[in-house]
Length: 225
Image (cartoon, rainbow, N blue to C red; front, side, top):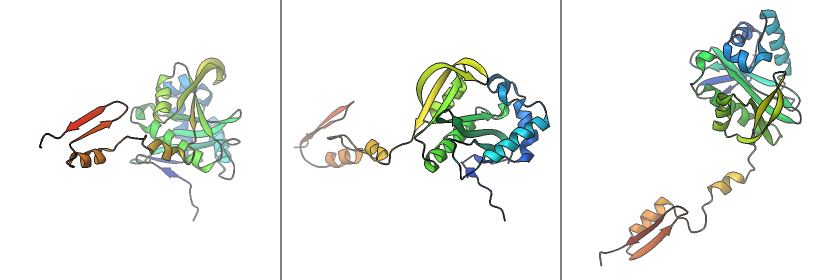
């Protein structure tokens, strides 16, 4: 039995495109949202769409890397099994770029954020590149919000060639965390107490203690004596 590579999230199944996706990909490419932000991905007819999908199927090679190949996942709604969009990693100059699109009827449900976050986490974990960039048209505020919710930071604004046209663009970046970065983030500053420690000290008859945090100072006096 052939094993199909897939990634699951609470609401989605992310898997490589297949030729049977052609009619649905053609349909989504005709939507106004796609025409506005992804004009280079508008397909003339089913044959045109099938040629593009066949190319992307050939690019999806787990022995390669998004620095050289395009890894485009079909986005399925888990509850219905319906194809509702795509998300992928692909080469952009000397970096890796994330790209995505969700059908208009399925937007504002968190699916773009869920899919982008999961694919980026997979890419940074599996491959050796240090960061992923996201490039949006300056006016595409909705896509910018998705990237920010996925942990991307705004890096720069410049004129770039987007979808075959020179346009003002915003570049976002998501960097791979170093192994000790998470531990450092969870380490408490010297002198900072946890809520549990504070409660324990409140129960001790010490008379007085003073708890200091960067934003709050709490002084507790014991008047029982």
